Length: 202
Image (cartoon, rainbow, N blue to C red; front, side):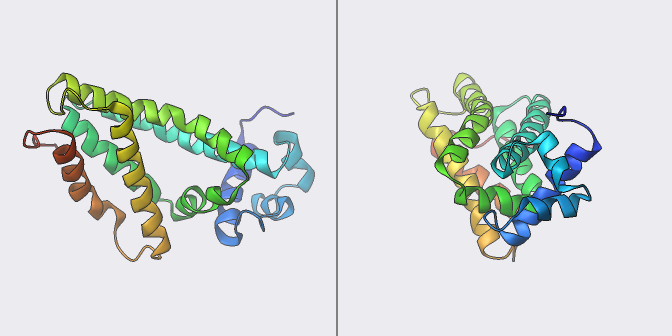
């Protein structure tokens, strides 16, 4: 199998996003992905075992890059409130700037088989760890309650972001996803701590 780097590999992943978003996962044939990527059908199999492998790799690459970028950006903020605000911002901006990727991650990935969803869950663990670190920071600085259950809080945060993004897609993106940042941030801070939210840098 060819090394998973280079222009053709990236072209196949980008083509997969477009084809799956436009046709649905089950109708996204390998031949369609190859045609969109402008490569021969056989070239797909130089990099991937099958269509399922393409989907898992797509999610791993896109989510991995997002997590790395988010981790780096959050390191520039000195308060947990700011970190949480910008985590929400980055999550929504990432999806709003690439609607086709949003359709794939929010809708089509849910149509895949249990084995694929299990793989995707493993990939998400790194994102969960980032959310956990923001919550822990909030507890340590007194913004959030000391008895806060980090696991429950993380489920609340990720679940809210995920459902908000899915609803945005299902409503044909008729409104700005980033307009939801402020109210959701206030909801989280108010729900996890007794103090008034501290200021954030916009």
